Length: 275
Image (cartoon, rainbow, N blue to C red; front, side):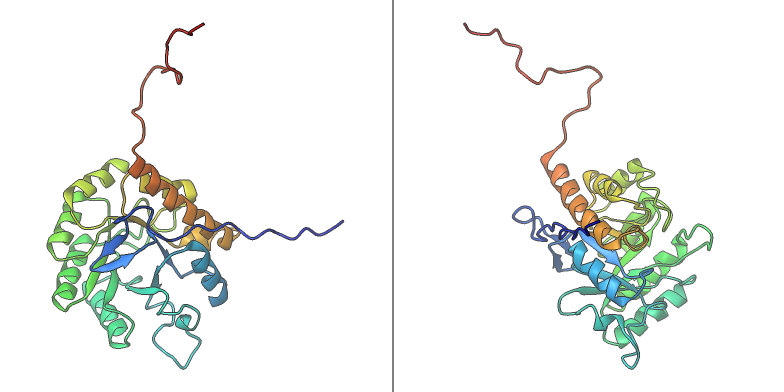
């Protein structure tokens, strides 16, 4: 039996789909609206290949779990060039405001970034955020000059309070972290988009490309994901699929979908044929 060489996966330009349609977060301009994580891959090389296939320009890294601080050991930043990618340190694994603030300060002190994806977890089973501690930590870090992107639940009130605290974006969950359930409450996400003026990045719960497209079609400014790509049977192919999905969802949102109707409407005009 002959072996068949696999064809290269198609790619999509990360350029803005329309003039002025780039994603701007805290003064940072991104052409790609997909942000990807770097955990759960087999090794740093697979991480690099998946990030490259995704077309993402911003990459989030768990400071407590992935080495980006010690340059004397194998370091993720040896595989992801900080000149090519915007590194977004995150405080994954922190259960108190104090821990989260300390972790963000460590990343900045190591020269990684003033950006921080702020996570303060309230429950180890659901990994839902502790919103009170999240707001507390956000206020501290904003005062210290951090550009704060908080992972939060899909609560419009909390989202507004995070914006009022000075956060550069809000990142509501679509479903529990790593669940792959997709967007469970599109109505709350829409309410959040109405409540805040900063970018809304859907974070957590995406399972496949259609989930990412749905999030973007709702009007989200971007999507952040990790497990959906890293946990796929073929992470590189899934990263490519997510790249297409986010772009397609954004295009569909900007195009404006047709109104839903109960009855059929003929595609062709109902006019008499001219003989």
